[in-house]
Image 1 (tube, rainbow, N blue to C red):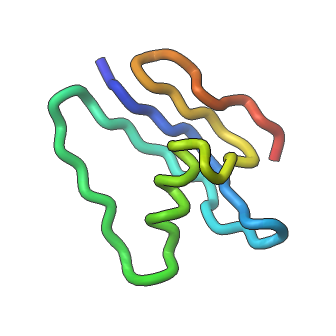
Image 2: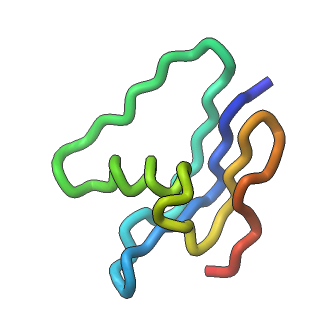
Length: 73
């Protein structure tokens, strides 16, 4: 069973499309690290998960409950 799921999530800042279709699954008890150089979208990904910057499309689930989902691109 997965606790956190992202399926084809896209996130933008205004007209700037930052995250292009990220998908990931984090299972209960796993420790996960999001790595990358400056400006590749690590913070934007986390802000999309937390709802600080709403995804423009894709699905985010936590413990099988849809938090954000099926939004048009």
